[in-house]
Length: 104
Image (cartoon, rainbow, N blue to C red; front, side):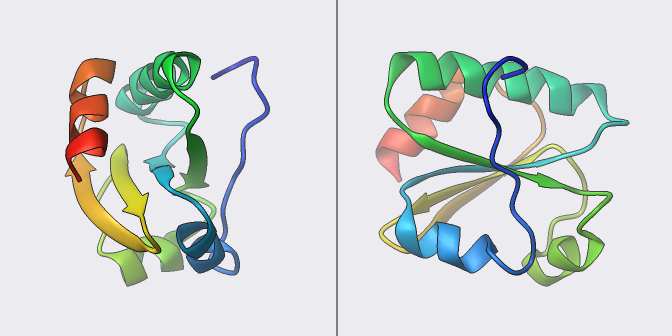
């Protein structure tokens, strides 16, 4: 996802994204190598299917982490039909993420 325009969410627009999009939300950290791996996995997914993807900078949004119960990055939320349908933590390959997305 390094070359593509990235959408970063804040506490203010987090709920709007969930309401308005079916997609993936990645809580990421510049200090965590797993976040970079997950960003690359999401880039692979976005090349395969049309999907909304947003990022939350964990260092810049500590209150959002607390309010959502995220303990660490990378953490991935799957949003569908205006709700968080699934929460995943850690590094996954694109196939795993797609499977969770399609089945949630």
